[in-house]
Length: 373
Image (cartoon, rainbow, N blue to C red; front, side):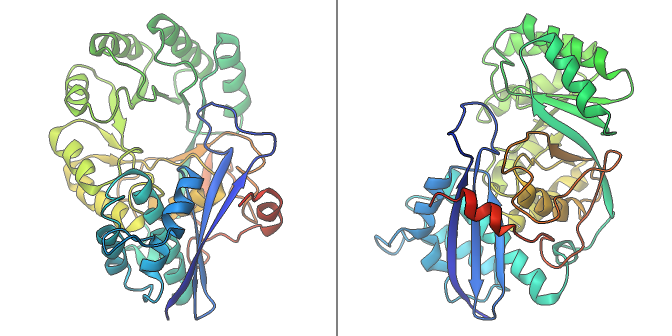
């Protein structure tokens, strides 16, 4: 079996994009076709038009090639070889950020091919499943008022989720406002549900961050996510050493070396690879295997449509000490409707897909309705 083509499809919600932290407003779907008639599919949480260029660009020279040209003709079962080839020959424009994101999409689509070719769900190819289902927490944007916080908690928690994560919005702009909103969230949740806060790298002053975390301790916040920009690893270490809260990060990492550095330095309690950004399942499984013996929990980032959700569940099935699933609570025309049989949480629990490959089937009516490329 050989790869014959790589196709990039951009879908976008009608009416334009709102500049909020909601990645479900558009997306990039990558299809990897083979001469065996098997097509692998994956979604990437990145900049769709940039990804399309990276994949389809004509070569400039040996170390500056488009990813499609690099993988056509390869056997998809040579997945490690393909990953390294993309990394090596996209050297001029690659090694980080959007090129790794594009590589992640191709890599995940190749894993989808391997699963479909063998008739196995991807988690069987990744080492096997530790579980058949996983508790889910609902992940939503932080609103601006106490009343909105309480209303969102009441709306979502009736579905039985194990907890809720509020993130982005106006968090990190004013410490007193942050504390007020966190207090309201805990009061609305009650004492038994998990509360997580995603600061979205918005804290600039370490002392403000430490003061806020000390206040959050009063409200039993389970973790604070991305308190600083991820290039401030030393501040992550200091903050973790001086608060009882768990510190989490990793969705912005695009190399195994970043994950290893944060784990080895004690910069985080929980690591959060996004399999559509970190280098795909080929890299994510290495992060899993490195973190587990170090006692660092792996909770993948997942804030996109059902494609990424299904792929993330394949990975979660293989994590020995998995805690729970991030279930995106944003409701757009794309977030639930790009796959047939959308994955739902039932009483706060989500089942691991068992169909071959990533376990989803694309909903072409929706894709063709909203595609813009």
